[in-house]
Length: 174
Image (cartoon, rainbow, N blue to C red; front, side, top):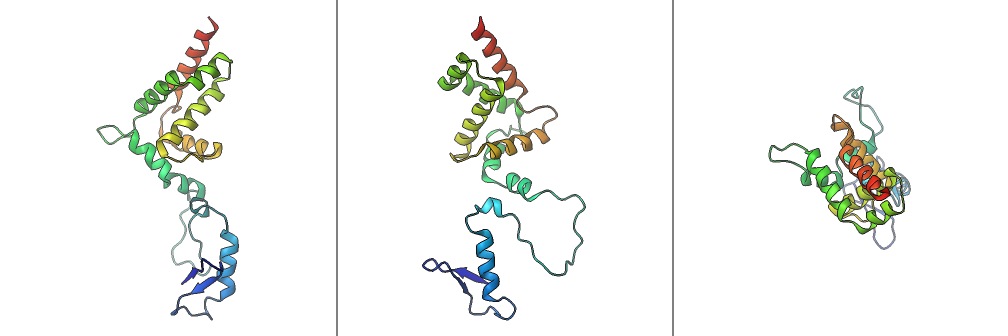
């Protein structure tokens, strides 16, 4: 319907766009409402008007859909899918534990008696950043990804990792 002029930032309607039906003010309002938002946060397009199909009673939130459809979540699923095509929490935990044992920062955190949650959050954030290639993951984004993984898991997704961190902390005391 319209593109955004790179020089002026103003909407440029396509030649075939009916300006009575789609006024310039509507395009400008859309630009203002979505300015600065990353594509994943914009969510699905919502159309006003008559709805032909009734909405599903239990619909996922835009944030959940954005997380599941995100490249980050896809990278995690691809990295930890076993030969049967299932998401393997054993592979995921083994990889995260191996990283925890080899990381100097984690060793320093253990030596400084950081909490299990702080150590786990650091490990998860750094591993997810390296897996996805996105160095700008926020704590909220990593938590949302962990929550999504946790919903699929029959038990807490990082249970083995937590046990290993507790073991590392107890060995540091002795």
